[in-house]
Image (cartoon, rainbow, N blue to C red; front, side):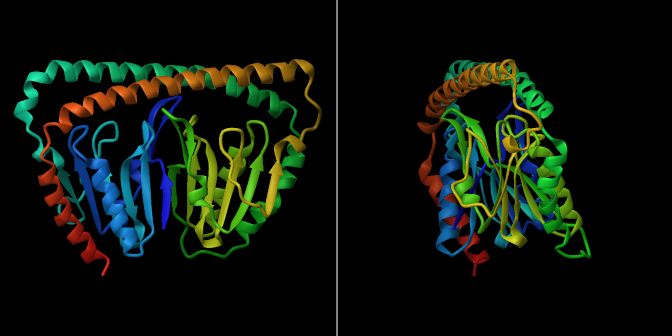
Length: 357
């Protein structure tokens, strides 16, 4: 039983993190924060912990790294209030209630640090080059954003706002009719997709619920407004929600999960789509008050083409950074005592197994 998410992302405003929402400390029975340099085995350690929890019949969330989707930034089992997180840069995490609810596990203690001292210059050079790659990627994404905004403005001008409001009113009524709460619902923020060295990657299929409402259309400019309204209505009426944000613009909601209703509201576009039959759908292209002029169509086509070029360049820069990071890991891998890491894993696994009995 798995769900897959991204807790952080490469966005038009740089690296953006929702780490604070992975498992709020007030809900955590035990949170383990992994420390240690690249290549010390943090991702493998977490993946094995996740597999252990699944073997014990638990739902596990695998939190992927946007700079390498094959690598993990964390594993979470909300059913027992457990999380294990990579607490190193760029998402530095430290204990809030040391010992009582959370603790640091430093895999760096199994590293022969003295053996690395002679390689300091090479390591520093790789780190600088990696940083430069990410800086260029973020500049490309920032340059692409105005193209998206221009297309959104064109489509917004042609949209029949009255027809749009009429289309989404029944959706709001469904949520507001749910119940009168004794307390407002709680909201959690994550990414379902990311801009990665492999291109645009999403895990929507692992998040699907029995019920699906779909929003589709070019750029679906009004989708964020609709999903924001739905989130507000759900919270006001006591429903917990999970808001999944746009990897390009992390202030915009792209998908919404309402577990109590078994409902997912998703935005489909050419970068991500969920292959599931929807019980309700709004097509933004069908609520136009007028047709697009030839010049508008030309502008939309130009914006889309240039956006994709900049997006591809950003992904290429991130891929270059990953290649360099792989080189960096080798300095650490050959200096690690992995037998010591294995003994540590066995100790942690025993503690986690006790939590599931």
